[in-house]
Image 1 (cartoon, helix red, strand yellow):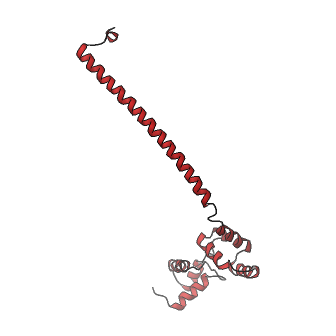
Image 2 (cartoon, one colour):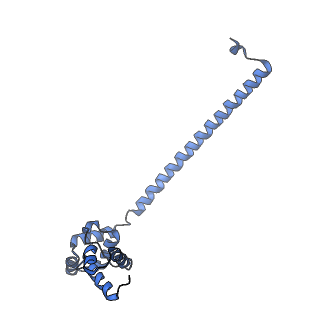
Image 3 (spheres, helix red, strand yellow):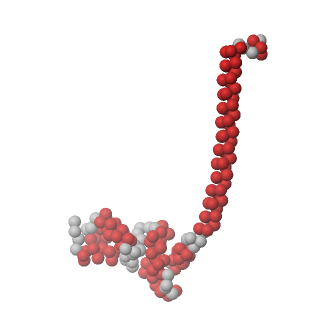
Length: 166
């Protein structure tokens, strides 16, 4: 079913802060199926708007929503941030924590790369050692098989050895 632009805008305003109403309540009040509202919310998120679910506490929001809030609030001073947080039902400490997490998101990458390279070297050494051991065992097995074949041939030609006759 197609909805007018006005109905869609009203639903979107109800989703966005400061109202941030749950989809179920919007659905009941406007008569729009929740599936449609979820689709519109996904479109908003795709276009860069933080539209967290009111049903979930802020700590359970998706990384994308937290990141979008960080982007929106990055250049704000303390008073602007406090007002933004009041409108969105957040705490300034939460947003600052999210900002710090975003800033440090890639900080460990060089050490992780170094650690992975070291693990790779150790794995390569172990693989080389195992291959060498396998080659040694295959050679020993081939030598044993050759000796058994020669022994059988010798027995066929000269008969059993004196050790086996007893």
